[in-house]
Image (cartoon, rainbow, N blue to C red):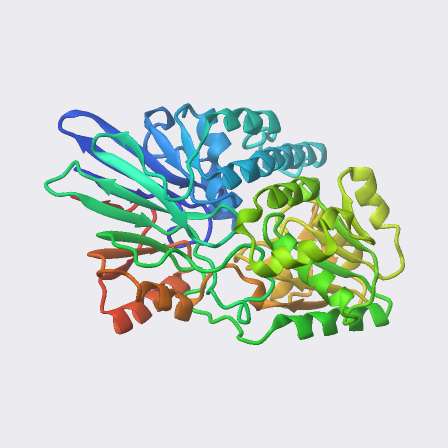
Length: 475
């Protein structure tokens, strides 16, 4: 029997892993993993990162990667560590981004393990990293580039291609054609789906908007992150400018937890625009991330994916790395110096959900002061520190300490790079025919359930919410 098994992002937003098992007429079956992401958020989910897959890693033949966010690619070094040695197919921009994100993730894993051993704040002796920076670097040798629209034949019965998802730089949906059964089957894995094509609704988007339309598949596996929410339709720039101006006027610092890929670049471009137009004072801006410079360089390398607005901004002002008063802090020494600044400053630092990284040090110092502002510009998964801070809690735990939350906390939901329900429905209406089955993944239970109901009502499709480790026959 050929089947799909959902090994992650089923009932939760993170940990995307979908196993495709294709029978081979009594011979060795083909086993392919679409995405290989880290679980983030609540402890019960994070513990899944340490669990073995239900199939040995060495029996998986290939990984097909939709994009470079860690909840889709961050478990790859662990998969390799457990015995996987097959090819990992992804677009060239995705490979470039993974080349900085995965080693950085390994470095953070090592730092966390060292901290727990130093403080003895763990029942594991010694605490070990899920994987190391070196292991993450070594796994990059397995990556193989696939251009958008290029058909790749893995076996005579199995081929795939990657088409644009417009979520982040290099992001794609995986179209699979499987001819092992009685008749050919087309499978579509959406990965994360980007916003609409209208820049007035999603301003500041660095890469072009809109997923590939006119899809044709028998089975669709689709994300549901924003299945129970609708993005605000107003321009975020006036609110963003007002929040920053007010904070600076009272002598405070703006701290922006931001994902190193895409979201940071989008925020910096909009901030530059607001400063040049006089809507935001020209205070120092610190992009405090070891990956910041490399990420910007990768974006500039792949300018073919830019929106016209981004191209115009770069043509007018040049590379962000050369903008006056914008500082890209690579070393720990540079990062520590930021905390000595007492005058107003804007700090953009990862991780976006405050699960680790340098943002923790900035928040530990700035959260207790009412003058400051913590500005969220990305989705906060339940169980993360970002979710705790955004939800209005009085304190949050960092490095074993309870840190009081007195700073102003605000969020701009317009920055999301995930399509919401109306946008998803708009895209689904372009399909050439209804899929036989749809399985919703990568969403909280309420979000997935509400999107299922909306799709059933408007499209009258057969839509189900995927269960963790559930198997779905694709014969």
